[in-house]
Image (tube, rainbow, N blue to C red; front, side, top):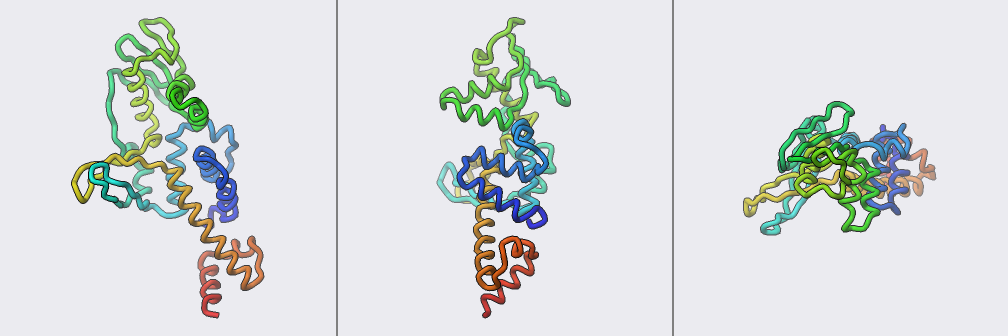
Length: 258
């Protein structure tokens, strides 16, 4: 972890203490893209951002994730490992899909995504972090509509332009499916079989929240280390953080033996 800068990580953790989930995700993404400004970070599609957070998590804490979920059928607490290195290396991560409607996306490279369902034609783009933030600020019953309006570039019915809010549900579901296919890390859902009853449970994996919880635990541990070493040796925080993890642990063992 130290090769990414313990001081930088502590600063991100400190800033995130009084932040909401969206702001914490932005802070973590800033650690993954240290040269990027806020505007650039907010413009990255959510799936690409989360793929970079998976990579950051692997660099900080290793490739294995310990995932816990409750069985939706019997309530049994399930625990299983997920290989982050395998996940970020796959073109199709582990998640459920529900193909809806007809028509295939006609996007390539940076071109808009496109669906054609019955008499409807819609061009749109995958949502970004800025889009999600705007949707969260809208009334709860209008969040989906706000997100769709921001991401829709053109919508037509039988050649006539229509507002995004007038798209029928089956067209909106097809848009969501194609958007997910084009940006696969935006919605990582695990389909886990319960060892007790055998039923499968859908478990959503929010990498930003997962990584934040790990960073929070790490930060509190290292602050305790800093306190103990500063008390014992009079060293400053930067001096302690400059020590390698091995040397820091050795000094802590000496303090415990004293």
